[in-house]
Image 1 (tube, rainbow, N blue to C red):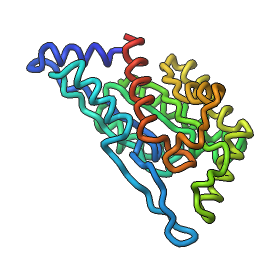
Image 2 (image 1 turned 180 degrees about the vertical axis):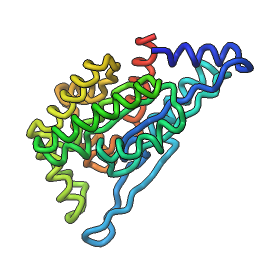
Image 3 (image 1 turned 45 degrees about the vertical axis):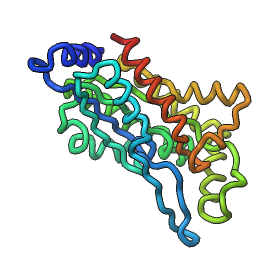
Image 4 (image 1 turned 120 degrees about the horizontal axis):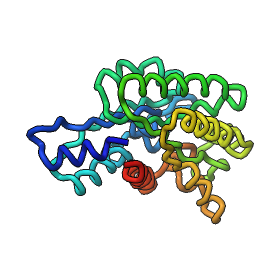
Length: 242
């Protein structure tokens, strides 16, 4: 990967090197959604916190390491998006910015269709990877967090509890694992580095951590503290693949 070289060059000689651009294509976690608030019985309001999102934390870390580099971050996350929807807006929201690196993170919403949706996910992710590479951008496949494994007692009865019940069924039934494995295989096919945050969440679960309580909405959005895990893992992946 060349992204760290570009950042280092910009830091060393800002006058003669362009500002590196990193784009993040994803869903609500990338967009910056944390808690969900029910409105009546069938509507939900989203709580956004842009300062706590993992790519903002990554930018802060890069700023400490390379204070003169001025790395440009493009937040191309859209709440509720699947890989197919991300593909549909790839040119407009990502490639038009001519990123040096594009981080792709999908699977949370795609997996809600169960194993029946795996083919659509794989096809969309492959096309996303191919188009990113063809445009001259490097890519990283960022695996998302785990989803709820139970319906939290902290959730009010109603729409959120129903969503949590379905999500837990998908997570516990192995569908999310299958989506992540398919994504890893595609990344390997195109020699794209994988920042495997999902594997770290699985390791937390295996060590006895209550995964549902590590989700800000008790469904599928990681807490602010665990966005740091995404940021640190991405930095590690970027530096490891110099």
